[in-house]
Image (tube, rainbow, N blue to C red; front, side):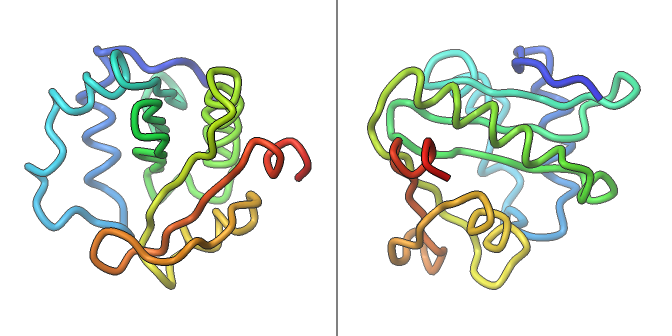
Amino acid sequence: MIFREAKTTDIAPIQIVRHTVKENILSDPALVTDKDCEEFITGRGKGWVCEVNGEVVGFSIVDLKEHNIWALFLRPEFEGRGIGKELHRLMIDWYFEQTKAPVWLGTSPNTRAEEFYIRQGWKKAGMVNKGEVKFEMSYEDWRNR
């Protein structure tokens, strides 16, 4: 497994990963364009990928502008191997090196993603985006976990 910063050449494989998930499925694949991905990994924040045998199997992207986790997804067959946890750690460590502002995310309720974020120390903070659970993480919570 190789973890590294995402590049614009990773956008096509990132999109493939995004469209293979079994939870938090996009209602319309056109909602997240290649241009969106490029903007988030080069302008608004940063992204990371995990490669296995030269193939991108997971990615994470954080948005500094909105202080938001934009994405953290794995191909289903690679879940349970610590990849999501490491992508999460890389992303959150980098985020808090840039700012001490709290970061938030939204995810569908009653999913493995919701359970994952609770295990990583996120705190529920209500609802957002048409029924998603809103989570927040402060710098202090991250450092003291």
